[in-house]
Length: 491
Length: 102
View (cartoon, each protein chain N blue to C red):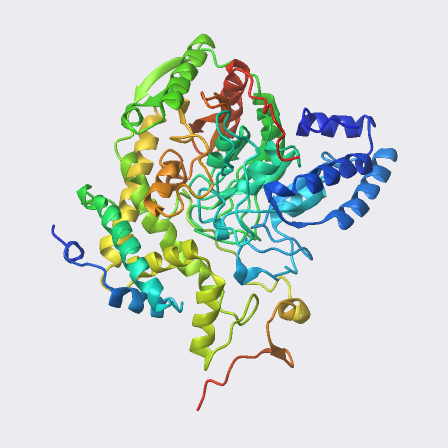
């Protein structure tokens, strides 16, 4: 019996390569645990049969001494990444039977290192949401519960299937995507490490598009070292993605645990005014002391336009989404619902195929791009976006990293925020500015609040400086108190 | 600068108009709900009007080098069955839709 709960990506990779167990043994344990964890509703589709075949081949490679870097390690993939021959739904009814004929660049890169696809993980429909409640397969459930209540909590979103699956030890590493916080917020809600790389760092090719100028893929893992290892194999130039950056990929693991003595940590003074839960504010102040103890200098910085990031985001992201989602017309692929004529076919297909949040965002996007409103809304938001970006440029002249909480609250109950879109959107207040500026950022579990729920610290750095995220991230990981989930109530 | 959107309110007709532009059928009972939700979201994003953006260039993405171009070369093809594999209705290598011309 392999102890999946205390295993992480690095230890599993090493155990496989040292032949402590076989890929088939490991896979069987994961399959059993996933099957027993159906209450969490984290997987849209499983891929067990193909995975078993792949595991057998991995074992042969390991025996022959031909093991690749992540040979035989199982992975969960957000259901937004196209996987050849394996259903890819984006958690939308409109794609419920879509089976891609091609593989996304990122999943292909990971298979090329020997990784094995366990299955496709739930997300908010088309990645639009902060709670994983808008999925057509129903809400995904957080493996964590508050110590004072039995209610089920959201795992965050949109990558709630990915964060939940890593937190529940159903895979050691899951791919995810982040348009406004969709990797970092779910990581903070589940006690996992979520990395949003620099825009352009990881290829977007073959990922179902939401807002193309903001979307970026990254890993959710248990540890900072795992995140560094995962990024190494996800990152890299891809000529199939016109926004992919031709910037060298580093061996990110070398940064883990490196000293930060004499380096600088920026703390944005505007964020002190935000409506944050008391425990989260205290935790943030604790983290300041951890950095001081590690020899860093704390610098107060100003991000004066950050309070406009959410409104700017809720113009730009829906505008891009309304354009990207025009392709779902019931003609070339996806669900078709017929009507009297072609116009009816489009309207019925989209009216019944999209869920409420997706429709709301397409309509907002259509409105802000429509004749007469384009300048007042869309162009205005793009100008504010530049000011938000400039704030960060100024800040990074003075500091190595910026440190904030990841979220204003810990995980909330399923159904609690669903009826109030603006309240739901406010969850991303600390993560959205990073996407608008295209910066890399990571969320590290930083302790438990008084209810026993995980909190996260977000570290932001300059473009293509991901190494610093791992360097500064390991300080939080070392300094925090234990974050073990005491109860496996769902098993 | 006072722009006309400040006087613009979203009505049921606005919702019907944009849902027609977006090709999304909306049931009558949904229109009212969307009217109130979208109105409050639009009022909220109008906070951006406080920001002085005189002489600020719009930023459409965070790339420093701009979009990369490539030679216009054919790099793959002959994938008819792949392309049709998810089509709801097709015939003789064509996607089929209801008749458009009277």
